[in-house]
Amino acid sequence: MEEIFKKVKGLLISSALLFIVFGVLPATAEAATLYFSPSSGTHAIGAPFTVSVYISSADQAINAASGVISFPTDKLLVESISKSSSVFSLWVQEPSFSNSAGTVNFEGIVLNPGYIGSVGKVLTLNLRAKSAGLASLNFSSGSVLANDGKGTNILTSLGSASFNFESREIPVAVTAEGVPPAPKISSPTHPDESKWYNNSKPKFVWDLPESVIAARLLYDKNSDSRPTVLYEPPISEKELDEAKDGIYYFHAQLRNKAGWGKISHFKFQIDTVPPEPFAIKFVDGKEIDNSQPTIALEAKDNLSGIDYYKIKIGEGDFFDVRPEISASVLFTLPRQSPDKRTITVQAFDKAGNYAVATDEFIVKPVQPLEIVKESKLGRIQDVWSWTISLFIMAIILAGLVILFLFVFWWGRSRLSLLKKKVSKESKEAEEALHSAIVLLKEDIEKQVKTLETTKRLRNLTDEEEKIIKHFKKDLDDAEKFVRKEIKDIEQEGK
Image (cartoon, rainbow, N blue to C red):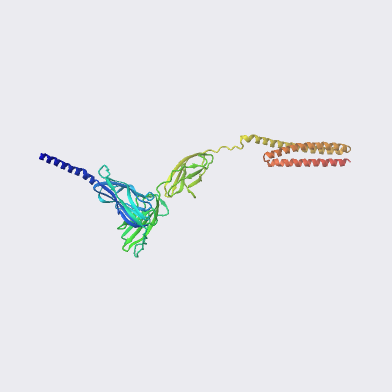
């Protein structure tokens, strides 16, 4: 019995040992942690300071980690992120931050054989205190993946950090004698500080005196920041990896044995996104009679803004059109022959990115010109027939006047032989001639009245105006002439 008890006891102990070895130990070995260092401190308002993010996985190789860090936006300001000395060699998501949302994001990869250790630097946060009080850095989420071929998440804990900010006065840095001068920064990729570029990998260079033993660099969106990323030994150039679009400043400071020198700031602007898609608007439609159609262009670019347009019609060459005030352009195209045309417009922003719009339009052939419309044709024909009849009447009346004058002259010559009968005949002639003149006058006045009626409907021609005046004058002259001649006959017959 005692031997059986010993055997059972031995089996129980062996089982317990196996449980500890194969159950507890693997769980301990696969633990990983993300944490901050330093995790506490006191700083003055406005003072810059740095906090690094570390990973700990002492017993299990890891090949990837990610995390989201949150911070109070009223207390803290992230000025930049440094990947210097990081254990990660590749980044699935470039480290980024948002001071409006109060977040920092990262996701990196370690190539085989992975990382094993307790002080693996992930990145460094360059921070600045904004207001008095306590501020905490916390992980909103995170993961650490084992290099086991399965991507097992072995993260067991997420650290935090807490800092106290005081409203004490920051001593003004006094430049010591003998320190290096402010470095003269230039950029072969972004040479003009006032211009935009579509290169997201800016490079900066500066002279490095022999006495310089260290350099501090930084880039952010503030024009007067103090650089915090230390390079010892110093470097004389820096190329940024995939900087995001926006307006930035590169800061550099040099140090020799006498101390830190003055800071230089260099502005650079990046825009890699083309303008938004746009359409070509035809002011008078796409099918027009006008050989010079007008188009409206209203492209938009959210960052650098629209600089100019390039236009090409058919197989022709591109030509530039630059907006004078805003991005909107109302442009009349060069004269086009009747046909179907293709128009291509490129909208360029100030960084050289462009969007393209293409459309078609038709210039219709010019139709034969119609002098009058059908609805007015009858009226014009009536007026024209009136004009012709008036000219004929004018000729007839002129002939009658001449005929009457000839008859009158012939009668006078006859009367000279018959003076005895003059008294009686002259009276009758006067009455007859007067009647003829009256009838003639009435006919002419009717024609004149017709012309004056026509004048109210339309403007008379110069010729028609002259006819009216001539008729009136001829009537008056004829009547005066006849009366004078009759009077002379009467006097001769006495």
